[in-house]
Image (cartoon, rainbow over all chains, first blue to last red; front, side, top):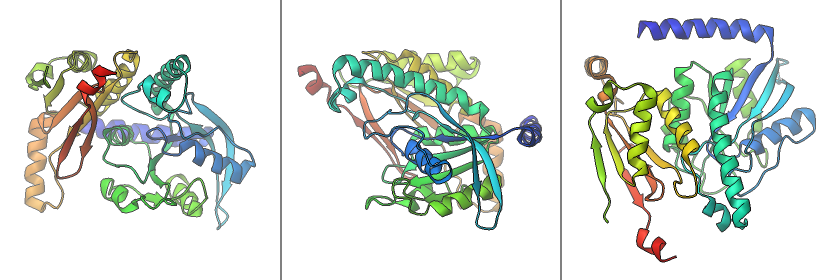
Length: 212
Length: 129
């Protein structure tokens, strides 16, 4: 226990020294189809005027780590925050190529996509150590108690990495922000629609509160 | 063949290193059995489990469903909190239990704070296709 506390303290000190020296890495993590790339695109559109990656209804559209460097955002009260945005493939415990066939892909393409998706999950996990801050993007219409969510958040907590939780897709009727908040009461949970930009200002405020 | 649940007491993994712990659970799941582990893995081992599972996924093995159940500690008073803190220190990762099942058999594990629902796939139907 004491060793853990010392480890956390050293990590924090090192991270602060590191932060001053270079850009912070802001990672977007979460299960597949939560809207990570949609949020990455929204951030990039808002501050760079361009998209970051392609989005799709078929899961595991993002199968490689994508990085957009030096994004500078400003708060209403004039604060500035600069970071490298890292969009990661969705983390899952199972990948079935037959699901991609059901989504309309041909068998060969589906098998290849499944293989790339498994590699994507491995890469996303490996990158966890490199992150300075993480935004967890959850689909607010889905069950927040999924073990993948709990495992990712638990890992970030163990590594003492600051976390902001986004309950995405609040434009949908089935979205339940309160359920996400109840699942993770110790974290700041912000409901947004990355697709339509609803509540996006709250998201930026949350980001400033976390790392600003 | 019906569903096979294999109970793994914590003592069986206690002395193992992280990689061997993860592999032991995964090996059982790959035999189409559902693992019921007494206690839980460490947070880092849970991600190792996901990582190694992904390395093993192929056309036959589609991955796993995973659920970790921890004893609830909400709404405890000071003394009860102290007591559960002491128990936690003594028992460590022996508390709660972990379910690991092959994705070809378990469709979904729904975890609510008060209940766990395990949805299985209709294997008979799958065999026909």
